[in-house]
Image 1 (cartoon, rainbow, N blue to C red):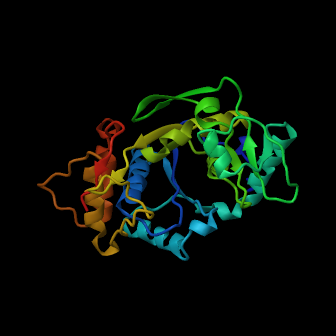
Image 2: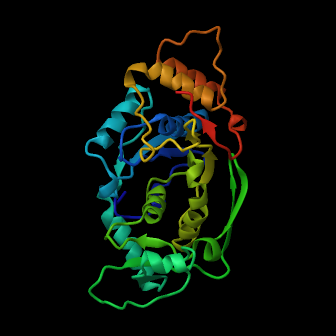
Image 3: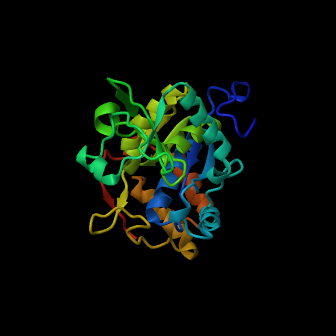
Length: 305
């Protein structure tokens, strides 16, 4: 398949093949919350006899940590989470993203925007009007016009029915940033189609992004995966575990313990009568006992390590 194409109909997998993915950003090593997300997507894929892919979302250099991508991959391997195809690096996908922007430009669906943060604040952060370039030499973003009305609905595997009015609640989303970087919403939609992803299992912090991703998929006539959002892991203060909140990296020397804790966190009670000696045994048990119904509705769960 041409790496710069969006979606190749002549190379579609069989309709019954599940294709899931884990897509970390290399802003630091894996912490417990990101391990839970990786594990949930892995177990759901394997329990459904599917394949599990890894995509490195390395399109935001200012937020990335040198060497973090390699560290993340080594941490996944240490925990027995092996991917089924080559890792996709978004930093190598610029031509594909630019191609989509050109397509949208030709159809008049995107427009340049130089609005400042203060201007956006005056509109409660929602930009739902076309503006004009006042300085032809100054940087500008590219926004996708949201049609009116634009009520997006979808059924989440874990969180039931969801809806969002793109025009009123989100506005014209940025696809290309002022700092000349491709926006996350553009890259994730293009790459989910390119990798033929059928199921996206990820943290509920991205739940609100899903309707706008579905909207962009529809504008590009791309397939929409099934989505499932698990609660995010938080610290005792109620803060989401993240690099920004200084969540500590998982210790690779305690991989079996990390995995066991993550499995329990996902609602799967490991039997006390059985001793698991390695990660492979834990994952095999997790796959055979995986139950989507065990995932709680949208609520925070405190990490236990």
